[in-house]
Amino acid sequence: MRYEEIEALRRHHPAWHLLRADSAALVASALHRVFVAENTRTISQHALIEALDDDLYRLRQSDPDAFPRTAKDYLTDWSAAERGWLRKFYPPDSDEPHYDLSPSAEKALTWLESLNQRSFVGTESRLLTMFELLRQMVEGTQTDPQERIRTLEQRRADIDAEIEQIRRGEISLLDDTSLRDRYQQFTATARDLLSDFREVEDNFRRLDRGVREQIATWQGSRGSLLDDVFGERDAISNSDQGVSFAAFWDFLMSSARQDEFDQLLEQVMALPAIDTSEEQVRYVLHDWLKAGDAVQRTVAHLSQQLRRFLDDQTFAQNRRIAQLVRGIEASALQVRDEQPSGAFISLPGVRADIAMPMSRPLHDPSNPVTLEDVSIGAGEEDFAVDSLYSYFTVDRQRLRAAVDEALEDRDQVSLGAVIGSHGLHQGLAELVTYLAIADADPNSVFAEDGTELVQWEHEEATISAQIPTVIFTGGKDE
Image (cartoon, rainbow, N blue to C red; front, side, top):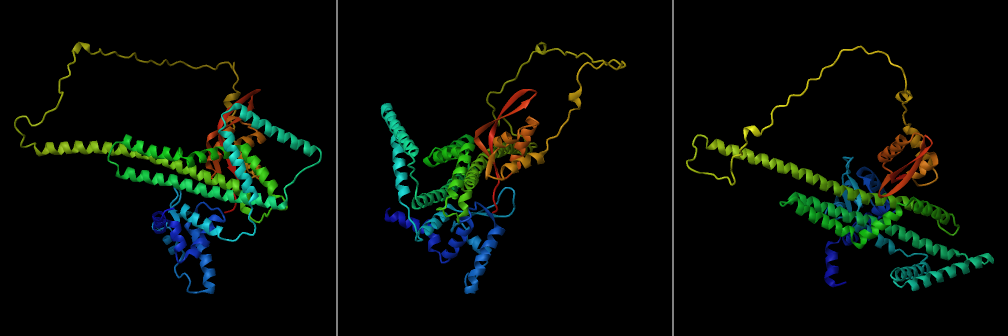
C-alpha cells in the first residue's frame, strides 16, 4: 500500500475513525455484543437504547463521570454521516427508527477481535484447504479428457484402497486436536460469510441510494436514466462478488443441502472434543438464510423504486402538458381585446381533412329484443346436483399446525417436505392456503429461482403442480 492510500484511509474511513475515537472501547464493546455476538441484522431504537443503557449503567458504577451523555445521544452520534458506524433507517411497516451495523464498523470489530491471543491456533486444516482449492482449480481448468480421466481413476483407486482398509478393521480417526482445528476454521468461515452478506447488502443499498439521487436530479429521458441504472446494477451482479453470492444463494436454497448441513452439524456438535459453548453456531444456517433474504429484499426494493420512478415520471409529463395548455389559454386571454394584425403565428403542415358525405356508413338500427311472458314449469332431474351443494372450507389453523409440527425438530423445512408428510386432502385450495400462510409469515423465505414439484390425488388421478421453493423457518429468540 502506498503512503497516499493509507493517509486517505486514516482521514476518511469509518473503521479507522472508530479505532481512533476516545470512546472506541464503549462503541466496540456495545456494537459487538448487540450485532456480532448475537448476529442481529436490525434492531429497533428502543431495544438498542436499553442494551446501551445497561452498558452505561455498569460503567458508571465504577466511574460516575464516565460517558455523561444519554444512550440516545450516543446512537445519534454513531449513526451520523461523519461517523458511519451505524445505519439508521425506517422500515416500511414501522414509524420507529431501526439500526444496522455498517460493514466498515464490522471490519473494525473483526480486526479488534483478531488481536486477542488465541489458546489454540490450527494450521493443518487450512493447509489441507489450500491443497484442495489448488486441486479444484487445476482439475476445473483441465481441457485434456485423458488427463481428467486419469485423475478420476486415481481418486477411485484411493477410495477403493480406503474401503479395503476399513474392511480389514483399520479405521483411521481424527484426534481431538484435528477436530478442534477443523471446527475453529468452520466457525471462522461462518462468521466471515455473515460479514460478506452485510457488505453485499450495503453495495446494493448504495446503488439504491444512487438511483434515488439520479431520479431527483435527472433532466433527460427515462431511457437514458434506465440505461445508466441497469448498467450499474449489472456491473454489481456480474462482478466476482455478485456471481459468487448468486451461486452461494442457489446452493443454500436446496432443501436437500439444508437437511444434509443440519444433520452434519448436529453430529459434529455431539462430539466430545467440540466446545459447544458457542450456541450461535447451531443457528448458522438460519442466520445465513436470514442475511441472504435481507439482500434479496434490498434488490427487490431497488426494482420497486425503478417502477415508481416510471409512474411518477408519467404523472410529471401529464402535469407538464396541462401547464402548457393553461399557458396558451392565458396568452389568448391577454390578446383577446387587442388582437394582433397580420400573420403572427404559423403551423406547419396544416390542411383540411376532406370526407365525402356518401363515404360515411349509414345508420344500422339494431333489432329490438322482446321477452315472452311464459310460465315456467317444474322439470325432471336428469343430472347430479351434488356439486351445487358441496361446499368446503380449508382449515388454516390445521395447516399452520402442520408447519409448526415439522419445525419442532429442525430449524427450517420446505413446503414440499410439509406436503410430503401431511398430504393435500383438499387439493389446490389447500396448496394456495399454504402459500398464503408463507406469505404472511415473516420467517418464511421465497426462493426466486428454485421450484418444487408437489403432487396429490384427486378422483383416482395424480395431479402435479410446480411451485416456488418456500422455506419455513422456526426462528429463535432474539
